[in-house]
Length: 345
Image (cartoon, rainbow, N blue to C red; front, top):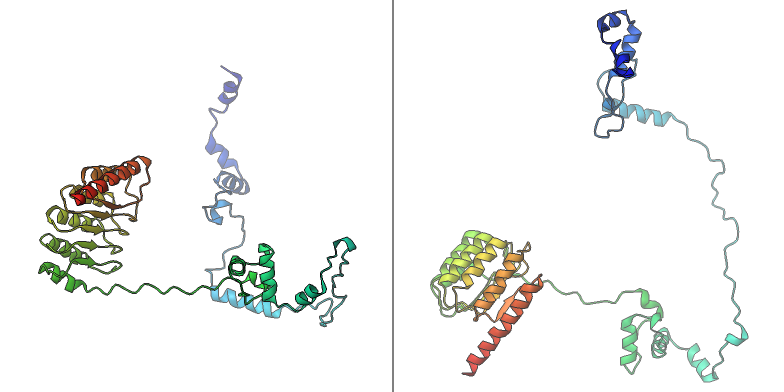
């Protein structure tokens, strides 16, 4: 047995209750404070649980916020303002700084002919700006002023060199007008197989109900005259993508489909790509700029579809992987070459 174990043996038979009975109230209180487990560095605990309560005063009651604010305001009003040590009179002391004039050394002085001296003395700011541009001092002016002075044979600058700090004024570009398409009328014309309806453009109409888009795809299954269908930025998701896929399996007249800038996931895009394999009339497909990146598997499927569908000659998507991008570019070149040879025949 080690010496440490021998030292502990003498405490084995100690009666703790007897020791506690012999302690005074002050010693018991001190023992209670020592046994409290506190964590002063834990910022997640309230202040009352991070340190021991050492207050001897009895609580005064619950917090009265209004009374506390009134007391603080009264104390602030009763405190006398401190007088300034030096009262403010508004008098300016000292002399203003005047930058001394620098004398130009004789070797740096440039002497011009009297005619040039007189011309420069009476030149306007616009003329000085054009002269600086001709002399190649492009750092003294904006790009627009520089190229206006170089490309024009006349003085065209209306402002001087100091105008470089001002931005160029551009004409505001008006917002694109809203899409005036009447969705209900278009749906009726698609259902009735209207001969004059060859393009359905619902771009940027974001309040189209999902059931109405599904009905449009269902009506497109039997339509034989619509050539272009565009559903850009219509907030379409996977349910609409599945409806478009079912439409592509049955429709034999659609040539261009655009579903860019929507909320279609990789599952919806995969359904559309599988349906494109069963469609031999589609020549243009655009699926770029979805809410989330579809993934490597979808990009590989896109390249495979382009290789197996020679009818597609235009495809809108920005590949992020080099392998699918190279395969898609090669397939598009081959498809366009086949289309050119068919037109020759």
